[in-house]
Length: 370
Image (cartoon, rainbow, N blue to C red):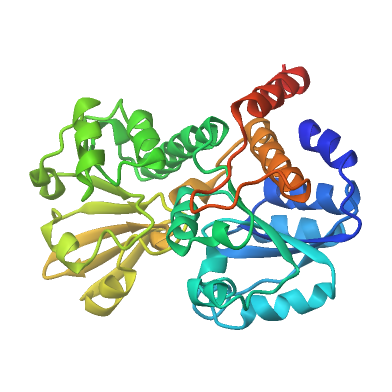
């Protein structure tokens, strides 16, 4: 990734600590290594559950990156009280910047009560949030009133990733169904959640027999309807494939009971929380694995197919190419620089990179990638 190579080589972080709570995949590992080797930062990489590739983590460690794996769930790892507090001890008195996916710090390390009482670790100099889910958590937490917090979640640059995620979900399902001698273009699809990811998943599946949208948010449902999608609730019981990306538990027991016999449930969210897998496991009369990525659960005589154990479907292959991730990581670096330069506002709204600086990044990106 030449753009971040260039920027990190000019950014001196030799007296800083960087905690990266990221997907444990190659592009994030490469980003961490650039911060370590070029900017001379002390970097601790904490891979998120459900979005890790062991070969990529091994690559990072083989190249000298310090990786501490928090485990397979949030409750016993990243969001457990005291876990992140303990990791800070590794940095001594160094100033720390946290780059995170999903607003993890709002659950324990920097929750609202701690911030209001002024008990936060004073060495934390700033946060850069990557996702919409985390962006919303920090807004609710009012983190930016106490610690400089930047977000790239709503950046036009970040939207490039959402397009790739939509395409990656389609590629993953198309490949697996093809291996099972099924045609995805003959399927009726319902997208649960019409945020940035949901919108791009719908676009990626537009060659399918039918694409409909379900969302509890009326404004998003209205947008989906204006975009030409059927928003009737009846589609839940008629769909062959249901894909969810809301950041919450969206496909629960009641939802599953409305689904048709033979439905395939898929998550396009970054957390393994969209689908109530526990309900399926505990109530199935017969469970079979028909593909390394698909299980069949039989409940009340109805077959429910589950893709990748409810984990994010886009990580079956490479979700986003280096070309786009180079630009996204570059915007993250600009956020870090702004925090260290004191270029931020203290308010409930999160800080964002301005339009002019984004345009400069895009020009540099074209220089390297065209």
